[in-house]
Length: 296
Image 1 (tube, one colour):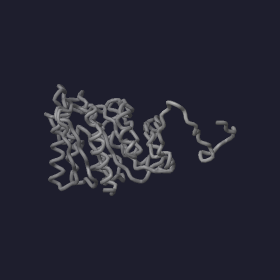
Image 2 (image 1 turned 60 degrees about the vertical axis):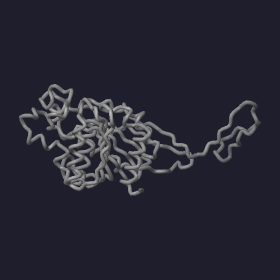
Image 3 (image 1 turned 90 degrees about the vertical axis):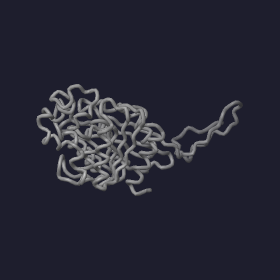
Image 4 (image 1 turned 180 degrees about the vertical axis):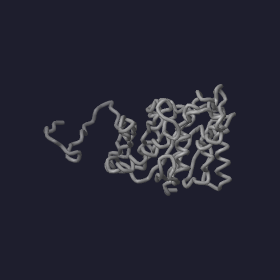
C-alpha cells in the first residue's frame, strides 16, 4: 500500500487494509480512556506548594470535561511522598475524573490548621483555573491517613469561615483518617501518642494531653453539625497506626447528627494498601461520587 506523504488529518489518513497472514486485528472503539500525568503544578506560590494531576483522555471526546477530585496524600503530617498513590488513583481517574493530588505544608514547616488551609486553597485554585484544565465545576475532596483527617476537616468546615474559609464541594471521602487527635487509645503502635514529638503532637505544635480542650479544635467530631455534603469513610479493621475506632466514632457521631454518611470497614486491612483500591472499592467510590454529583 503506497500513500502520499502530506499533512493528513485523521479523517483524511487512509487506513492500512491489506491482509497480513498471521496478524491479529483488534478494532479501536474510540471510547478507550487514556491518562495524562501532569506533576509539579504550583498552586501556592507563597509556600511553593504543588499539585500532581491525573487527567483522563478519550479519542471520541477530546473536549470532554470531568469532575475534579482534590486528593490529599497522607504522611502523618510530615513531608509527603505526594505522587506515591498515582498508580492506585489512576484506576479512579479512568472512571472519568480529573484528580489533583495536593502537597501541603508539613509539621516541620507549620502547624494546625495549615494542611486544611492548603487543601482549601488547592480547591479554590482548581476552581479558579477550571478553564485551563478539562474540569467541570463539580468537586470532591478526598484523602488518606493524615490526608483523610484533612479531607474530613474540609468536608465538615466547607461552609464555615474557619481554617481558610468556605469552599464549594459536593462530597468528601475519608480513607483511614486520623480524625480524632485526642483519642488516646486510637494509635496502637505509636508509643508517644499525643506527646509533643508524636505525629499528631508535632502537627498541633504542643502536648495534646496537656491541652485537650484546645486540641479538640482539630477533631472532625467537633464540627459534625456543620457537615453539608455526603461523606464516605473507609477503614481497615486491623489498622495498626490509626485504630479503626477513629472512623467508627466519627460515623456514629455523624449518624446521630442525621448527616449523610457511609462507612466501609475493610476486614483484615491494615493502614492503607491495595485493599482500598480494589475494583470493588473503586466502584464504591465511583458510585458515591456519582450520587454526590446528582447522577444517581
